[in-house]
Amino acid sequence: YIEYFNTKCSKSKEIITEAKNYIPGGVQHNLAFNYPFPIVITKAEGAYMYDADGNRYIDFLQAGGPTILGSNYKPVQEKVIELIKECGPVTGLFSEYELKIAKLINKHMPSVEMFRMLGSGTESVMAAIRIARLATKKKKVIKLGGAYHGWSDQMVYGLHVPGTRGFEAHGIPSSCYKHTQEVFPNNIEQLERKLKFNKLRGGTAAVIVEPVGPESGTRPIDKDYNKNVRELCDKYGALLIFDEVVTGFRIGLGGAQGYFDVKPDLTVFGKIVAGGYPGAGGVGGRRELIECLSAGLQGGKKRAYVGGTLAASPLSAAAGYYTLLEIEKTNACEVAGRAGDRLTKGLLELIEKYKLPYVAYNQGSICHLETTGTMFVKLLSLGSMNEIKRRKKMMEEMGAAYMAEGIITLAGSRMYTSLADTDDVIDEALNRFEKVFKNVEGV
Ligand code: PMP
Picture 1 (tube, rainbow, N blue to C red):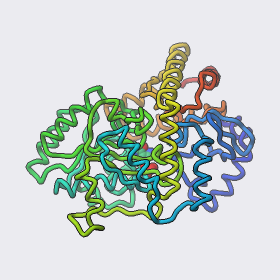
Picture 2: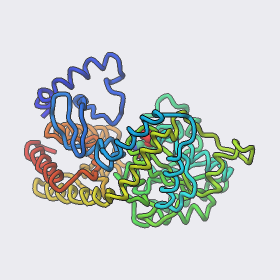
Picture 3: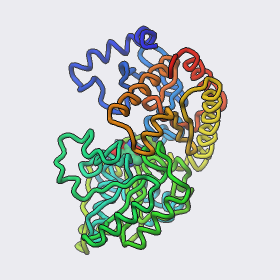
Picture 4: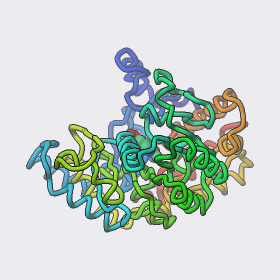
């Protein structure tokens, strides 16, 4: 497959080879598929992407989540172009879209009484933590092992594997992690022990969770986990932050909080909140919490500082607003969710047919294909670093094989479905997956 890939994507290879002289690793984005080399995309439309060699791919990367309406979705694009013609991409002043998107989010997520748009998910997590610390006057933040909450110094703690302090976190002084703690997903007793322990030592400002489980649900959590975390937060006076960067407007317009019927104090947004356009971030929650973002300006009470030159630019706010309206109109979350179910069901049948050591599962339009070994390592946090690296490499190699057969995934293991994924698209994808499973030995 690697040889086939080299021939099929020779133009991409040429461009990337030159790019390596100017760009670290040849690409500007971590999500870009790097093995054996990244492909260069020249066109994206609906469920498909096309590369510099003219190859067509089914796109299950979906840019890592923001394009739930499918790539290059015209009705939103037209509105954005109209707006750019009127006032360009940024003014630094207020546009009515800021109000419109805040009202629309509040309609679907009542816990978000107030909303402040920011530049990215990473920034928005930082803002939520700052707000929580200001409100509670406490410092500690507890996250779940393996959860990704952006790349701020305090949040890359233990990334990927619980207990491995600073893995992939080089260049960050350990003092930046001083107030970040981790617990195992699903282990509610451990969380309570930690909260109890912290109570004697200054308390916990917040517990932050991805409400479908760490790594966009790659490590799924129990049905009642979020409810239990909510109760513990109330008991110990910590705020509950839902990181809905991926799940917001994907699991449903009401987010994972609507699906699980759990009300967080603060919600972090990203991705779909700007419909795939720049400036995809925001933080929202209870009025008295979010208001601290304005108090300084009005000479009022304590203020948590946030910033961003492009935050809530007319382009970001309008793109987000029209994207949410289109999701309402098209039922995109449900349609994409059904496509995710169909893809997962088909993959499970193929796993059974070819006796693969794989598991497939999904939370609506967030789909996972993992080796059973990887799941074991991830869920129980067992296994050596070498074992994890070996399995990661294996998934990457499989990802390259899927790519050679015309399917783009996130590192061979995660897939996002969209409104554009009709039954025909999913069936075509399953045929291509089957080709790989037939051809690859020892998966
Ligand atoms: N939180 C979660 C759950 C995410 O998946 C991501 C990005 N994949 C982030 C935060 C960071 O968002 P951004 O890339 O916009 O900084």
